[in-house]
Length: 203
Image 1: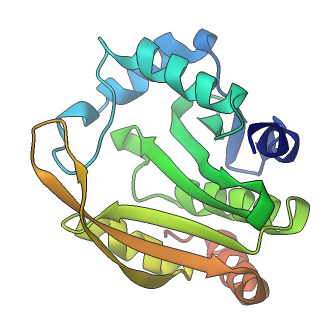
Image 2: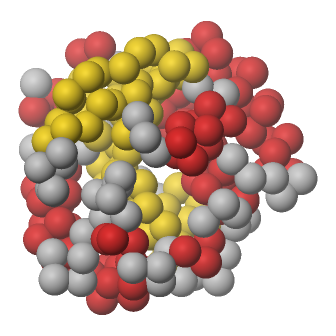
């Protein structure tokens, strides 16, 4: 399965007018520390964003998952070329052509902007049109209402809730809300997202 996933998830750069997604590597660590420090994102209780002290290990783990064929992590640059965060294909299943988009976080200055909409559109387009995925998942904390609303605005539908799904760093239990977009829905979602992007809309 690892070899099959590795062949399926080849490193790629995805670029749009307002955002660029590049394969993540250790050289990005200093810029990611600066991005995470904008808003002290690691203090968010309902999301897991690495701190300046843990970000190098976080990147190393992401790259190890990439090498094992489990994920494809990206660093996110804004229209000026500045690193503003990360995102990732994860939980890849090449045999069933399914994957998840997750581990997404952005510097406070670009949150709730059109950048996220275009980044998600690039990832979804590559997943459905190049990787021929049959479904793309999104997952978030039950109590992260902003994230849940943003995922729904992309056009994803809620599949269900995995209760006591994960143990959080503080020891609390996370109920995980699962959303997905399936291949037959992609043409409509594509039109919806391109319309939002053209209007500078936010997801």
